[in-house]
Amino acid sequence: MAKAYWIGRVDVEDPEAYKAYVAANGDAFRKYGARFLVRGGAFEAVEGGARQRNVVIEFPDREAAVACWHSPEYKAAKAKRDGHAIADIIIIEGYDGPQPSDG
Image (tube, rainbow, N blue to C red; front, side):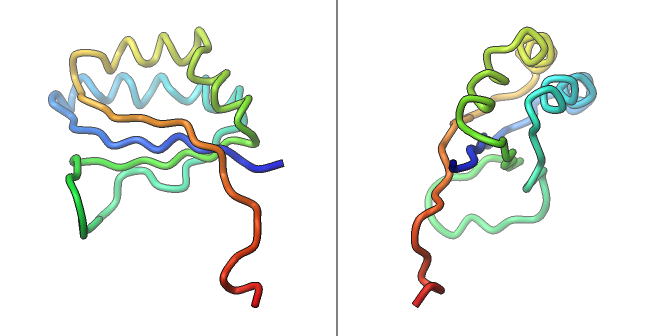
């Protein structure tokens, strides 16, 4: 079964208020087996638009990723972010098929 990911691009408008969201989102992420693969960090936008902050969160599967988004725990955390950041977030299923390195 393929893993799933949240891919987020965020412009933080109020960094102090955003800290409350960061502190609160861990409850939902722990409950649904999430793991940060990318959380901020230096980046180079080589094509298209960009936001200030990029995040990739891995989940065991698509069901867990979707359930986390709709969970009361995440809704409570997101309420702390609302009005303090602009975000584009998608939930996407991973790929576990053949790779270029396979031959």
